[in-house]
Image (cartoon, rainbow, N blue to C red; front, side, top):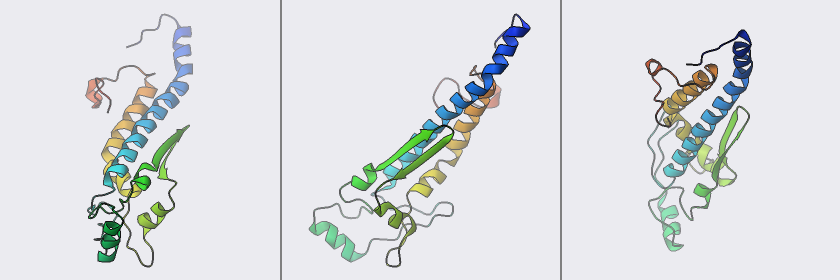
Length: 164
């Protein structure tokens, strides 16, 4: 706990809190964005069950599996051919905003489906599966920012000895 010797020290501490709040929240967003990116990449190549509002992945059509096999791509591995789409998933954090996604145009078709292809969402489920993690990390960042980056009392439920 910080001890203040003068009212001026206390005033300087309070003046620095908004900046510390932003620093802590940005760090929390970076941790969450990295986790969602990792989860999304891990989902590609494996059939996914339904989660939250997102549907279970439909089996690939036999014609799709035959085409993949004919071109030397892994079979029974939905959305995985060369791995380029999986590796295109990235994240960026700017200010208090995080963006996780892919610049591969095929990702949109897989995420939402088309008239001829059922949806096999990746990004939405990756965020949904990490909901509890996100709440804990952002909560810890918010509290840490409010107390000026000081150690958070264990009674608040945050483990300070390891990265959430």
